[in-house]
Length: 459
Image (tube, rainbow, N blue to C red; front, side, top):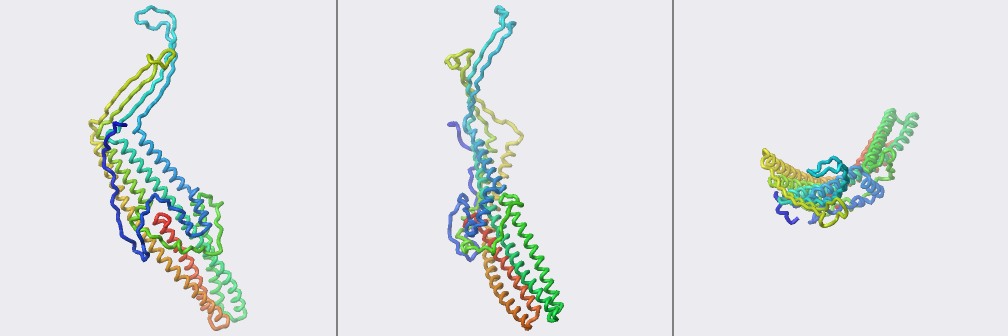
């Protein structure tokens, strides 16, 4: 170990990344210094939804993609240990015992023939030690490369965990929107069916036209079709959640709820994180930076091929044909040294260095692209959440107005002061606004989940 010397190749310097000062947002952002190693946290608990918490726990335990990422991390760490093992000597012990019968006609080198067979015992207890000093850092660079790759796998595991938890939350809220669509269409269908019977009675009595009857029948049929579509969409989302949670779809069930789950205001308000802190925290950026470090170490590995390797060997032990084996006269030993260096390879090593440097440049460009994507995703998520919140507030007011309008239109039609067309338009407008409100609330929830993902976890 004392024979190790310098390690050839460039020392890793993390590439410079874009550093915007702040976001394009009306939200006040303050300075922070999070790191990618920080735990992501159970960020979904902000939504205060017991069913969502259960689904997240199940997904993070049984999701197959997450299990694959965990196994890949274990494999990468094992590979790093393998890459570092040549830094230490290897020792082997190979005890051996042999009993042999010699021919009666064996050669005697001029001595008298005994005309008798002979029996001979041989016992060996050898210990062999081999060590290749890492004079020019080839092994250390290989270990550095494998270690950086393992760290990239660890960051990738965090990315997979974050993506899976975000997909569960997104599909869950999309399913709850489908539930709301089913409820809205179901209630609307009940009301329209009752009104259809009233119009039929009035039509038979001559106080309602055939147009009123036909229009109401068409409206009932349309709502029935939309109800079936909402149920189909819910089934598809439930099956998607089953896959994310590592469960068989036929055995998986998410019970409907009576209303679209409310979300605490705190879940929709981002905590202060500056762009520079975001890039330190994002696991995909961390994984890309570790891949740059691995590629940098690979350049050193390629350059070390220009230098010779030194191998030291030692062997010792005991050899005897009779007991006792372990005795001073039976001691045997040997020492050896070898130096191996390539004299001519047709430019293979130079090409290897060029290849390693090109692959390093690729990882640097990929890191920069990953960083730009992280900034763009976060900016888009901030903007989407702001717009979705304003849209949800506006849709809520529109629903209130639509309910008032329908109440007035119903009264006017019942006393003969208004036409059926006026009532029909009021009903359609309210149904449209109720659906739009459910969609706006879902977009708001999905935008907050998107922001969590962009900010790399609990914000």
